[in-house]
Image 1: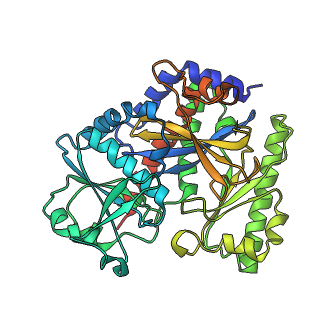
Image 2 (image 1 turned 30 degrees about the horizontal axis):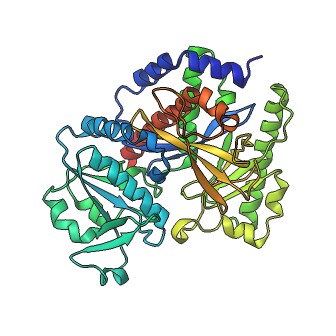
Length: 424
């Protein structure tokens, strides 16, 4: 019977053919300008468990990629706008999150080294604007770099006059699209329609599974090893007993399906499931459960986790997603892999570690840290890498994981295409 190891070998051996297949099936699509994919793996399954269209974490990419990333950004931006000279990055309003600011500083640096003029802006509360001078405030990143950030409203005239060639969103728009962005006549990437105000994780994984089914028919690869099963629970208030019972019933069905699949594939592993906010980022609104009954036993703190997400946004749409216990260990901590892309071009990656969590937990939470993945693309090895005893499965199978990430990139563009058709 097929297993993950044989699937990895097939994908690595046919990597170029698989990428060509993705290209042919997405020939009419403009892929997301940038994105990142979170991947969990063990000896049984490996899959993308989250796809970010407004990725943070550029500061965690290895310095071995510093020369290559600007070139890939140049290639990508030129394919969108051949005559582009000036870019405005619209960032989150995380003025106190110095690590997020470090990410923005790194992204700005990459684009400047790609020969673009780059400014940073954000939508600030009126209470902060008084501290600005000429619409600009100076912020300090985690490592002490100075970052000038404009109040977006101050740049309205420049945007109206097309001073910037495009706006690069690094803001997930979970609270909706600001009127100012609707009014300006400047291209905005990724699409405004792709913000968390309208995007759902369940839609993404539906598109991933659809692409994997096509690949399965063409290359004789069982998608079971590369995808996660999931169910959506819409209009769900976790504090409402009736809605909680509905969630429990869906979880019962999902656990039953997983148990049957695991028996069929001879997997000696008890399934577990993540309950997630179907829209949102930063690891908020996520709980791991080992049985459907856990839903009926949620305490007040657990229910609160599934009540409000980022910026206090009310959670009323949940996804139940098959969990993949992580066998990856870095520095004796449970870890997962994060890969970054500009369009179809691989930029690099890093590991998300968590010293406080188990292999069945959400790692994007308190206790997490990051380890750069330093792999020289020219030699496949670097003197500045981790102990290869820990890293060798990733290094040897890097093309396999890049393939998983690329499938999510193409799936995300299918999402965007459909969202734009319904976006008002």
